Image 1 (spheres, rainbow, N blue to C red):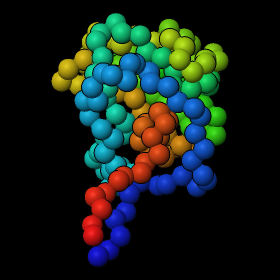
Image 2: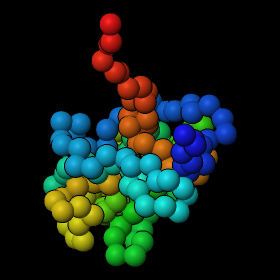
Image 3: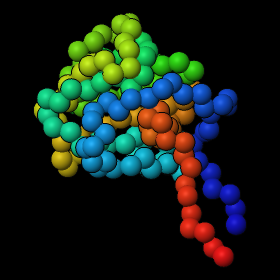
Length: 152
């Protein structure tokens, strides 16, 4: 069978900053990362974490705010981290501005009341390494391994 093609993969090892959840990890994962078939194909370039409007959003790792403001109809915050990682958060009302240094766990935004990104209130967390979208779970400490059942 032909190999599936996907978005570009990072060109260097995925060194990642130590991650912390932007909202409490006990909240439900509403939608997982879905790798698009190609760079412009359909998919879900992040994860959606259940959260209520007004909830605090924390930086997943130390970094510098690279963007804070509206995109289309929602507030977006982007932070550049070590080793080429970038995280993005939406829909949010940013509490920090572009150029500010932030630390892991620092409150950087609040979930915006409207417009919602999901069918229910949630935080969309995106992650990129060298401008290639990756699962944000990698930033949060997941290693991407999948355990399969043992066959005798």
